[in-house]
Length: 112
Length: 115
Image (cartoon, rainbow over all chains, first blue to last red; front, side):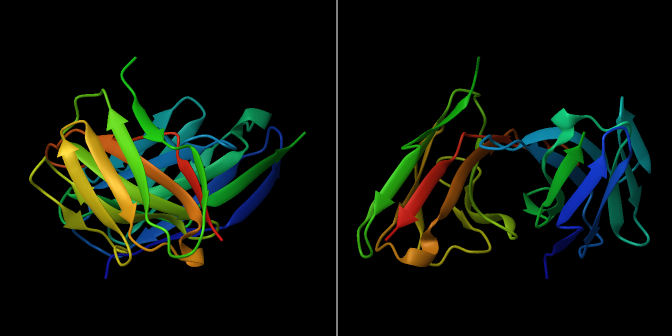
């Protein structure tokens, strides 16, 4: 079936350290993998995405890696800052690109 | 700025009542989606629509119905609300994808409590 598993559910890191969130997906035909950030009381917003024709994408302190063979992808945040504290959701496209299925979310806390 | 809006932002209702949540967008997108968010369960798709005449069930459509009144409006109804429908509801919009997916833009959310 259509499924995206996300780990860990909570993550606490010291400011300046790196954070890694991992997701696995079930549909080998999935070809689009976005990551959304939801700050407290706010709406989810896209922070980075990757398509199945590339293995890695970086945007300043944020990077995403994709392993199509293993059907997993990861979000890497380096030099974490207090404003990185939020809930992060991964997602994968299903039925071609008709819809997204989201992971369960990771609550990231950056400790000063 | 073009945006996605939802009304109401908060609603408290009683078991058995009919509730409608409304979503409007000025982004000019064809595709619209309704999700519910529960702690530990992420965002789950309820219904989605690719144009005015198109309605599709998501993974958790039971107990819900939708109406796409216009390209810019997509309403979610709970015919007879029950307490386990207490959740945060998000509307989202997107352009049609190219060869792969595209960004979805979320509204501010509606917090619904069913007593």
